[in-house]
Length: 250
Ligand code: SF4
Image (cartoon, rainbow, N blue to C red; front, side, top):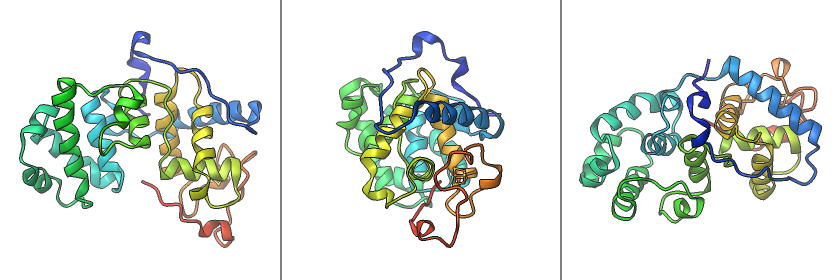
């Protein structure tokens, strides 16, 4: 059973108006939302960063998860926060120490970026990460995905996300044709339009879990899948040219 946003007060929730994605049939949208959230209630993963809404903790987890599998991230997430419990302490640390703590996660540009984000957060925002999309995107090292994750997981906004798992699920269920890499604009539209009002936190977490454990890159669980009655890729065929599209995920 996942830890959900249910404990957050309604005053913390900033909802954005539902966006439209051309070609998305309302009944299909509703079916996808209901089935995904029901699936998540039963199969959602119990992860440490789902027990907090602290923007600093969310940022650390999201940057770690960008290139690394969940089981490798969990111990490092705890170690990193134990060593640098706040933006201030991370900003004060020498970058070389931060990189040592990061080892062996790899992609060492990530600890450098985190350090730079921490310095900027302290200097420009008094140690508090902003929730505004444009302000988040103005940080070097925060792209559209990370900004959406911070807004939905730390600030409970209905902000879209699009990582490899979400791309894979949306492309398979609603598109099925073409290379997802060349259809990012459409995928962002879908990600935004599908979020049920006020449920961005749970919906986005559910999307990532669904992609990581059900609609996996290889051998997805199509027969048990709640989307199979309308998924455009069902049944997924490992030998089809579509399967050759690189669909990795955390
Ligand atoms: S039916 Fe198969 S391909 Fe479609 S969403 Fe479910 S697991 Fe993914």
